[in-house]
Length: 112
View 1 (cartoon, helix red, strand yellow):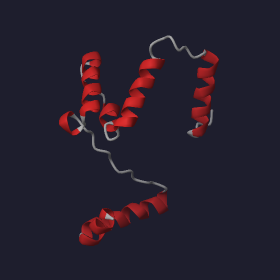
View 2: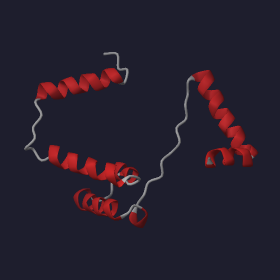
View 3: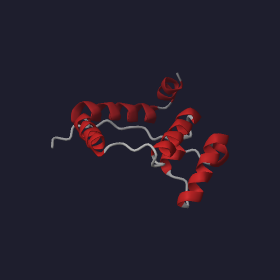
View 4: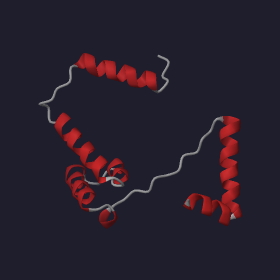
C-alpha cells in the first residue's frame, strides 16, 4: 500500500520503478532492494544481546546478524543452530557435507 502511494506521489520515483522494470525485461537484470541493518537500540533485546556476544568473539558485530535482527525468531534460531552444530558434538559426516555442497551448487546453477 505504501509502495503504491510512493509511486503515485513522486514522478522521479515513478520513472525509477519504470527503469527498473525495463532493465529486468531487456537484460534479465533485476535490481534488489537493500535491507537496512539494525544495530543497538533499533535491534531489540535479543538481537542486541547476540550482537554483543559476537562483538566479544570477533571484535565487531557481523552483517548477517544485523540484517537478521529484523526478525528475532530467525535470529535466535540461526544463532542456536550455529552454536549447536559448531560445538563439535554434532558431527556431520564428510560424505554428507560433500553431497550438500553439490546439491547447493546444482540448485544455484553451477555447471561443474
